[in-house]
Length: 300
Image (cartoon, rainbow, N blue to C red; front, top):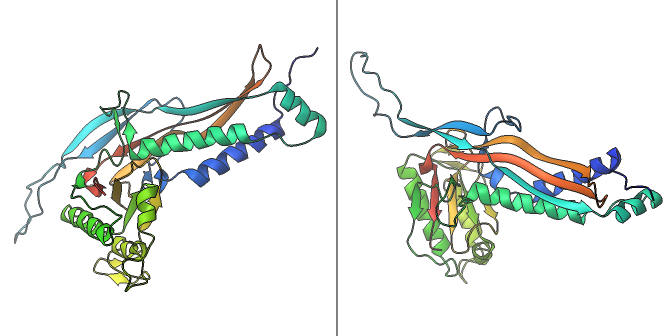
């Protein structure tokens, strides 16, 4: 009996498109962070340097120019770029059937693998990575946030979402981080702000919060900070229930996502079973440069 056949170019292209579609539809974290200049750097780049802002002295007012120079305070660090991946198999009989009948291959394997990688990417960007469950070797935007609005404000109580977001914005403004901002929530807290704020108002807390994230303007009007494009509210199950994140709009000054290899896939024929092997993978890491641009909501 003849051995199994590898995927054709057409079949691989079909799977590649399925994988790209799933990941693009499901990822949330990339909406919160800028792309690092020069990305993607290549699969062989295993480490990347970055600087974290410490401080610089204030500007001076004088009647004559001086040479009182100052160096910006930076902490240099090196981060490893991890590989995020998920593998699956395609049964040789399924492939033979598809080749015989011309019917498209079932996409459940690559779709599920792509979804798993998308969830892991979001978890890395938002939470970071902790090999022991306690200590973070890689900080995500939530774990690495410089601000923390820790006052207990259960979003299930009308008005608490507005109060909590207002408190986090005050923290960001005190750090000279201006709007617009983004808000990221677990689905439980997201659902709690969908309803009306009170029986006397038909405006939801979500609508009010979005105006606040834009800097206090509705319908993209001007704010004290100038015209704003409007903040966004994102929902993801990688955000722990009862927590949230208010973050500055993506800006490479504050944080960026360093990508070695963007979403990719590869296939091969397994030597013994003759099943086809598939893999979805990417190499990336978030770099937080100004942690004050991110504020936790740690008890909502």
